[in-house]
Amino acid sequence: MSDIDLRLVYSRRQIERAVEEMAKKIDDIYGNEPLLGVCVLKGAFIFFGDLVRRMSNTNFELDFVRLASYGQSSISSGKIIFSKDVEREIVGKHVLIVEDIVDSGHSMDFLLREFSGRGPKSLRIAALLDKAERREKNVRVDFSCFEAPDGFFVGYGLDYAEKYRSLPGIYEIRGQF
Ligand code: IMP
Ligand code: MG
Image 1 (cartoon, rainbow, N blue to C red):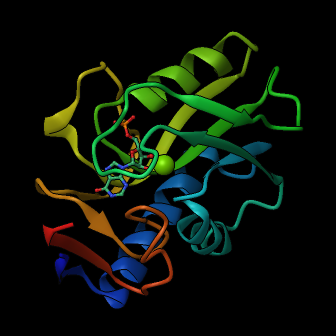
Image 2 (image 1 turned 180 degrees about the vertical axis):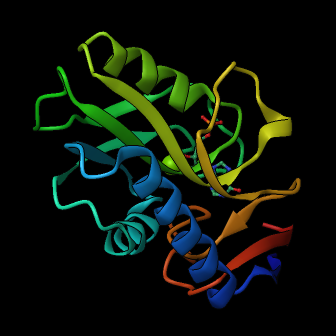
């Protein structure tokens, strides 16, 4: 039996405005310095696409990593699967990790450790949602669009068991799922 209820939390317009503001802040910090943006697949793919189109840095490069921790459930397994690495060099570069949600912080803690061992010039995190209250690892989010309330969110790239990623807004998913 499944009785699923989706409640709109952030509309398409609210997301657009927040992403545009974030892009401005990122432009302010880096100016036109060479910058490598790293999209964390799969959840950040829509956010990343919108964010980079709002930035005006002409020395911007991009790459992708794939991290997974949830499997088919809404409770993190705590075990991180790093199944795709970047193909660009990190040494000596400003690196901006673009993630969908920082929750317990385990995934970002893992990636920060991994990347900082490769000698970046700087390393920061931009996240669509920051669930700061749920943090178990001491991970700081440098740029966030929204401080998320408690709950599980889908849409705008975010999934529950691979579903709902294509919804244009962000929804809280509730009920027996
Ligand atoms: P963390 O390692 O606990 O910080 O969790 C990181 C990952 O869990 C994120 O990259 C998301 O992919 C996923 N996640 C956490 N909360 C949610 C949510 O509310 N909806 C969808 N995915 C989530
Ligand atoms: Mg993710």
